[in-house]
Length: 632
Image (cartoon, rainbow, N blue to C red; front, top):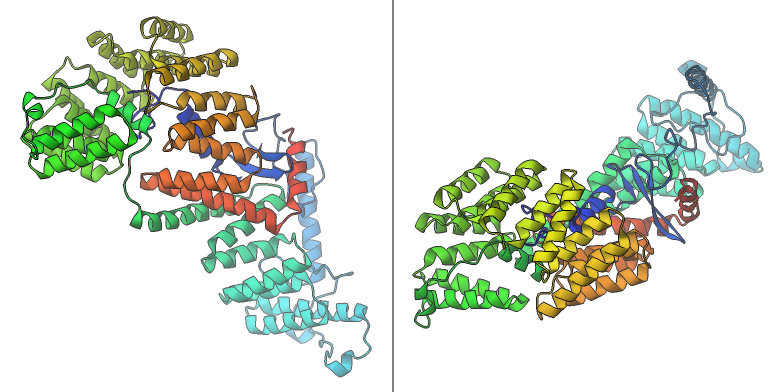
């Protein structure tokens, strides 16, 4: 098996492109705001930036998280100064509350229309009579007086809100709005509607508030919450994200909400898609890599001499189709193995093993388990035990996984397949010393099995022995000079050491070997690796990298890595529409429920980003400034 295989249970050679790409996605999630890495995706004329507050790509971040615009805290130099500043801030806040009267629970205090504080009595009997606002009484009243009246009605509404007299508070806020429309009045009335769970009205009033004051964070939060209650999740995500960005600092509760809602959107779309999505094989390179990770078994003579139309005859056709190594031939092989099982092939154990193998590749774990169980029951084989062990690992059942490896060893302790794949499991679990032992055991049993040599060198690199790893790859090049994977993974280690020119040379050699040896099923990973170096490590242009990825996709239309890399490339150029096309392609190629949910979540996040900029075009300049301030 080529170490690059991204199968859930197969460890890829670090630093493999799949591992890098998966980590990049996991850290950033394509979100505008991400809680895991505390990341903002910043969109400006220069493209997309990632501004890290905890783990910056560029210079070190500020020592503390920037305060929201409303929190005007002076800079301090000592702990005692900080305490004094906090004390003073609390004192000022209490003074404002005392002057402005009772405050509604969500904290909307002061109208933007207020020019001076209006005393708010605390006792019912001391409440001043509110001014007459009939048409006759207001005839000839100046705008300034109307503003003063509106503040009195707003303050009276605050008192009723505090008493939970929401209908009365709504009436008073409505009067305040009729006198002099103000964002705070609308937001306060929205708070009343929120308490009554009248979510449509909350959206209506919060939107009115934002029309007057587009960056009113409280109104955005209220509307986002209302959208969430109304199950208008994309709109809720946009509002929550705007709050996070406009506040200038990460907000844990809202960031958690963004992450949760994006995941929910992805899950909802995934569930709908799963109802109609047909199971399909992954990329041709992936299938070939997995099948090549097992030594070829001799075909029983009775299969070759099978009568036409019999079960063994279709088993023979399936084996012949597998040897062609094309997308169509693999699909044909699966159909023939299925037919062989249905016709009760004489070599039923082999037919079930092979059909189960293809079901596993199509992420049909239940079907694969049934076939492998039956195959082992009829006639146990090393490969059936190993394949079932990998399936158990994929199902998070390590005890059963280990038991099957033990059964395979008991059946034939001289099989190199056992130790290679068990080494892969150890590698996946970061048990590198144990992985190295198993790879070495596999080599001792078959020195010509190149993948064990490659993985051993990679594992030595992981263990910190760079010299042993590099020497291992030099031996591989000497002994397996026609094997593309040797050059590809050697290139990856060189890339990790920042020897970019040498890495590109090895990727070119790997691809030339692929072309010279294959007419179908070319492994495009060397092209994508080279594109990654040109783009990510700035050894070329983004356009060059994009062309390489497009070439890879032409050669292997099912390559999810090529699609994912292209999505990143076009996103880095702020080409959101193109990015969405590739995200949709990624969703189409996804096979497991987890992959489908993840791809659908990326799509929702990308759509959110586009909608955010449409709704708040003023963010472009602000976010560009943020990126410059962080040295990006």
